[in-house]
Structure formats: C-alpha cells, structure tokens
Image (cartoon, rainbow, N blue to C red; front, side, top):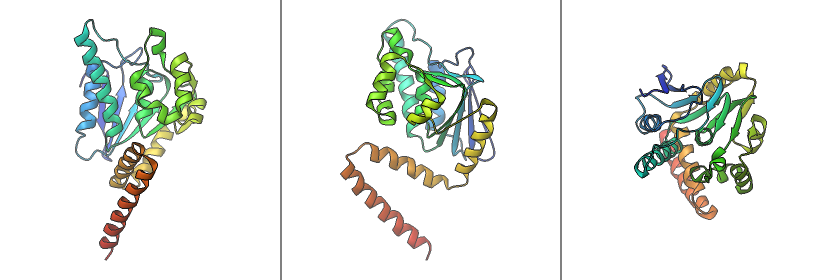
Length: 237
C-alpha cells in the first residue's frame, strides 16, 4: 500500500478506499497507480468500491509533477489511467464526499457511478488559476453537466456548493455531515440487494450507448434486449 490510500474489504464484497494524505489529500503518481491496479484487478468477491476522504477534505487535486518532460508524462499517464479505469471498471463505484473536492478530486467524484456529498462540500476546478485548461476533466464533464456549464466552471474556477452540484447532476444526494456515513451505507445496501452482473451490464450499456449516435444506440439496445430476453426465457424453462 502506498502512502495516502488505505484499502480494506468487508465480507459483502465492498472495498473501501480511504484517501488519507492530509492536509489536501492530493493524489501522487503512486496513489494513482495503486487505485488503477485495484480497479484493473479487483480482489476475489469484490463488487463495489467506496471512495472517501477525510472529514472536511475529500481531495484537493493532485501533486504537481516533478521537473522535466519525463516526470510530466508519468504524472499525466497515471492520472489518465486512474480516471479511465474508474469509468470502465465493472465494480459499482460510490464516492462519499465530505468537504472540498478540486480538480482531479472532482474527477474522482464525476467518474463514480454514485456520489453523495455533505452540505459542507464544495467542488471546483482551479487549473485556470495556474494557466492550464483541464483537458482530462473536459473529456467527461460536458457529457455529465452540459457544455455551457462545463465551460463556465472550468473557465472561471467558480466553486459549486453541494446543492448546486446536486442540481447539475454531479452528485446523487446531499445530507448533513453527521448523516453522510449512514446515507452512503443505506445506498450501498440498496445496490447490494440487486444482482452484480446486471449492474455491470447496465454500466457497459451506459458506456456503449453514450459513445454512438442515437439511432445506432437504439439498434444496439434492441439486439441486447432481444438476446437477454431469449436467455432469460430459456433459463426459466
């Protein structure tokens, strides 16, 4: 385990990843690689990943890369791979956000399937303050909240409150900090009450349909639904 991530698994297949690198919980290259490895090769029996920070700070981004082109490349590749695998994994992913999320921290939230935030949480993209366009963020953010909102938030570093993040669809639910753990527990319990293989199929459909024209998506959906119906019919007789 690299410094900054604490990983545990319970008997129900829930992996908990605690980001614990105060004061900012900023991701290092090693932390990105460890998260990517976990997502690429989950332990046996795992079906859900719970990602959370510390009280008051979820993740304020990532550590700057070291000097030189090689260090910059290593940082960018590690960030990209962790983000890609968070979106591609068959594990159901749940972000538990209590406090500040900035830059790559918002990316972690945005790529999870479910996100719950406390009322004291804030979300923002500070890259423009450092003379950077957040290209990795812009690869997914417009599809989640729309082009205009994505432009405004990344071009002005305007912070979003938890309530505003809920309205834009960045999070599923908002509650008081004292209620956050119980709210996430409840939502995880609901998710675990349904078949893992169906949830993995839903995730694949969402990814595939979102990458093609609507007419093509309809044809793909028809084919998949027909195949699933035939298999289900066969299994009941």
